[in-house]
Image 1: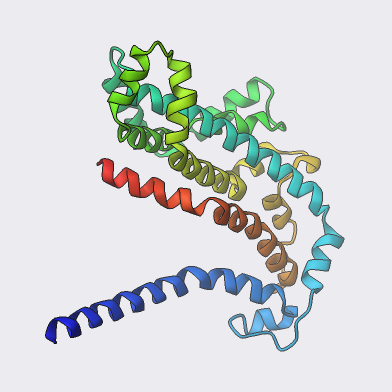
Image 2 (image 1 turned 45 degrees about the vertical axis):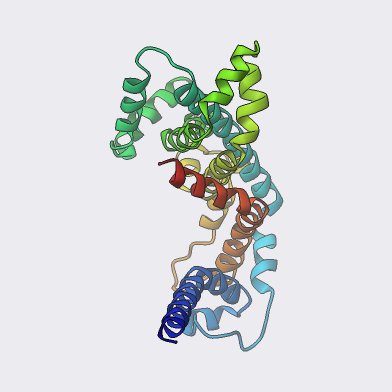
Length: 277
């Protein structure tokens, strides 16, 4: 009886903790959607209350002031390009470090991990000077090429691939399969959860990036949604608040949709990485 009661209390505590965590995670999304449907005066004076009247003035104001479809297209071009290149190069590098023995493999990988300890802001000025000199300022290449490689993503994919038995790879090599065949037909399907995780993390990073486009994209026809949001800044408190919350909600939606499509692979990846350790 005591064991049954202890198990019930433990289960109740678990559900309470999970419910509290879910509320903490979901509340910011609810806050954004709730304020996007309010009149401006209510957003300023009662930001946490439910709207007294539901209005779409914020959304219509955004479409009146901005070319939203163009901003969406520009953000998608950057997000998809960066995600594709980063995922592909992470898969190739992760396979090389996990399954192909070559001289200095451990030292090179250790040096790459060491670079993660250096604050990225230290590379800001040298990177900008280099990109300016090769004429990429104002073009998408300035954002796509430097973001195509991520040491963290390579580390994540390598750790996942280490969990794939070496015997499978060796058996394929004995049967005459080349490295490209092994990579494409064996490793990529097995590493799908890790690659899906890399894809969603990279897409989120590029989609939400504000500083990069602000620094490099000086032409309005190449601006992203984040720079469009900047256009609604005002000098009076509460000014344009309906448009700001409406556009913020629209920016969040694609990330949520992408996550729901590949959430199963996302969870599998982190579960398998923890087991391989």
